[in-house]
Image (cartoon, rainbow over all chains, first blue to last red; front, side, top):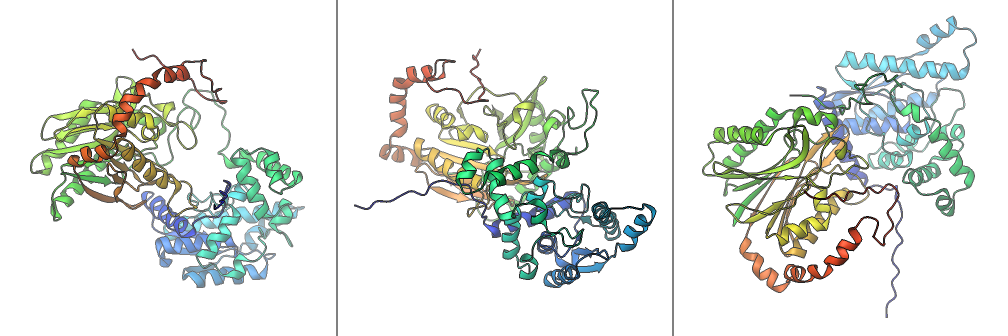
Length: 283
Length: 308
């Protein structure tokens, strides 16, 4: 008699990447389309998130309709520029460089004592200005590039260029899934394989800032968001400290994932009482 | 043989006239193709306005009279040879009450034959229907010029009880307009599409009925209505499937003469008719508020309303 053991059910982060790619391409076409656009601007940092966004946009819209802007500051790592160029070459999209050093340093000269952290935020928001302006120049929309992990951790500068894109194809993909999809779409290994960094301060890496590796954080996040108790996650091989760290990051940053709080004084307060989806329009 | 066309179309949000024109253009396109014209066309849930509207429901909902007027005007401009039956999902307004509804119309004939109001309003996860809509309270079969049928909308069909009532009421075709945002991208198709197929097959086979699922497509603020419409036959086979995410027309002939022999081989519906009354006391027992042996889960709603 054969004895067969069923596989226990479990959550999976691994996706059918061809299916996801097709869906995200459709997302870009349709969400741009009803807004009256067929071209996109991507702030290309040389990292995997913007590289994947470029790959998806090139497939969705045609490479001739994708404008990548690399926006270095004097402290940016040299390899960031090489990788941004490589991404543009790989996917055949437009590429240009707008150096933000003068923008940032012009401000820094007026505010003595600007810390590295503050200057990093200024850099991130200077890129927002350029992203929107280049969108206007090209009659395109600039795409958000923030992934689900960094969004959940609030690990980004509020209203930076990745956060402010009206359309974001990666926002529901954990970093682990970004890596998987990037590999499927041919993002160069040198871009996918390097340690992720916001590149806003010298020597900075995401995982040292966050205090946990993305691949471990993503499994914890998926189970936490689905309501599994801490003990369940710990039994899967994660430490209580890791679980606590992840929960703490998520729960300190809910405000960052919302529009600003508005003092409600009526029964027609927008998004509180008066509720319409963002694509609602009357014919 | 009843020629069906499932029109898996993408509506423009909140734009009734554009959606009627899109429907008319699709029907004109079908007239130009070779082969028999459809006698019944089946449109998705909320096709006339798109699905996710939040409070916008009250700005786009139609009364039954308005629906009849719009569809009659559409039909009169089509110059369609003979009658055309149509199942279409729309948000319905009756006085100050709003429903997620599906109409069955005999265009060029008797007009509006039936309106089903969705009973099971998903209000969890990405869904928020009961905040804006009232529940229907009936599942009823009705007679068309082709036979006895019933309409169920989306989550209605995820509860086997509704298909059971419709089949016991004599329905031989279940029309199921739906709007199902894609989620679960680990498998060969979105997980909800796979679930829909298995549901259609299981219900069709259990009761020996045809199931015609018409599933909305289009991106609605990032939520991708999945499509993947199907026609399932009374032995539980998938007779046809539309692609996911893109607009398509799924044509299929429904042969009601196949139902009796299939039910003869597999008389589950007759068994149900005989056995269900035996279970009635237990059904009453478990549904009676506070008397059920199963403890209510946290957050579970108590919705056992008396029907007037």
